[in-house]
Each structure stands twice: as C-alpha cells, then as structure tokens.
Length: 272
Image 1: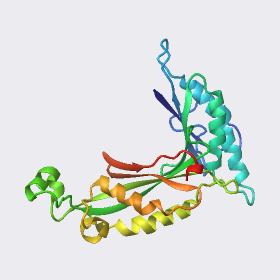
Image 2 (image 1 turned 45 degrees about the vertical axis):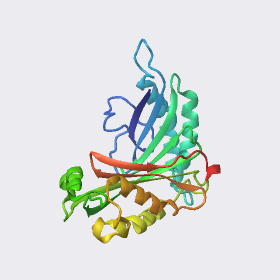
Image 3 (image 1 turned 30 degrees about the vertical axis):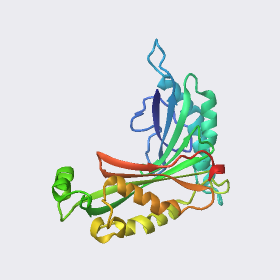
Image 4 (image 1 turned 90 degrees about the vertical axis):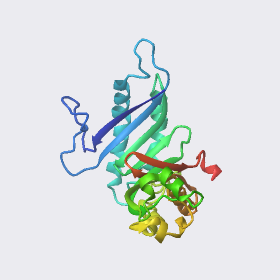
C-alpha cells in the first residue's frame, strides 16, 4: 500500500514559526513575490493493525519540514549568487537518500518537487540518481474517429457522435516526462527552454489548431484516438534527446476525464 503526503510552502529568508498556520494553503504562507513550491513524499508499506496507518502523516510532515524544506531553502538562497543557477533537479537524489534513511516505519517510494502546477521533478527510489522532469503543454485540434477497416454502420455504432464526418474539437493537454541524471554544473536534467522548443517544433506547431484527419499526414491513415495521438507524439519526440537524457513518458488528456499515456522503463543512465 502507498500513502502520499504533500507540503505546500513559500521559500523565506528566515524560519517561520509553525503556530496557527493554514497548512492547506501552505506554510510558510506566500505574502510576497517568492517561489511557492509543493513537496510530496510517497511512502509504501503495510498498515499497522492498531492504527490502520502505514505511517503517521505527522511524522512525514516533521521530516519534510525539519530536513528537506531547509535543504531547498539553502539551495535557493545560494542560487541567488552570481554564477549559481537554480536548477533544482540535483536536489532530488540527496533528499531521497536523507528521507529514506529516516522514514520508519514505511519505505520511501518517491519524492516529487513541484516548481509550478505545470512543471515538476520526480525521483523514484528504484531509479535514483535518475530524476524525472515533467512539463505540461496544450494544443487545440479537431478530429473524426473513423476506421477504414469498419463499415459505415460499424463506425457509427463504435464511435457514435465522434464519427461526425465534419469532426469535433478538443483542448488537449500534453505532459512530457524526460529522465536523466542532473548535470552537476547546472543542477538541470535539460534546460526547460530546450524542452519547450523541442515540443513546440515537433508537436505543437504540427497539431495545434489543425484537423488531425485532414491536415496532418500522421493521421491520414491512422484513426486519431487519444491512444494513437499519444503514441504518435511519443514517437515524434523519442529521438530528440541527446546524451544521458531519455523520454520516459507522454501523457495526453483528451478531456479531464480521459487520458492515455505511453511509457518506457527507466532504470539507469548506464542503460541509455
């Protein structure tokens, strides 16, 4: 069984007392212009028969606040010095090692640091020192679900109103996940700007505000289901990374209720 516990906090120049706080909105609170982050630990184990808990979440909170939040704060303040970038990915493996050694009962499965609702780092214990960088994108497109292998009647029965010959549209959300060991000079797996340029050039510019069946060669003879869209995007991006960086996953939301993903196993950069 796994249990996830998340902290939300603003980075401050000094330690803030924990009395009378709104932990749901975050502590320390964001009362100015400063980074506001979330840090989540995923713990696995069997629930204690007496308490029904894998681990008391107060214990997780204490460990994160006493050990990991100060590490992040120190890193951020040092990044303000000339020549020291705020990369952040190089924080994950040391934090996983520190927390994993102190987390009893329960075993650490993963640690996630969210820099924004659309950009995050994830380190799975089994993959460390490999860290995953995840970023979200958006594109709008129309499609018609139609299979040439089915009769007209079968297409209508299988796809219903999504088989409308003139198509229908979605605001697709795309999450791209890459994996690698952080560069010790920059603290980055890959500059975010480079990832954005790659995704924009290979995916967004190709599919945004297009009718997939009509305008895009990739779907000329391929039914543009969310599953096929995810597969096509994965293949378009997979060879775009160099060195010890690999594409780990592509996830596409067709609606808030429907998504599909394509993944590949990441074990070690030695396997890249």
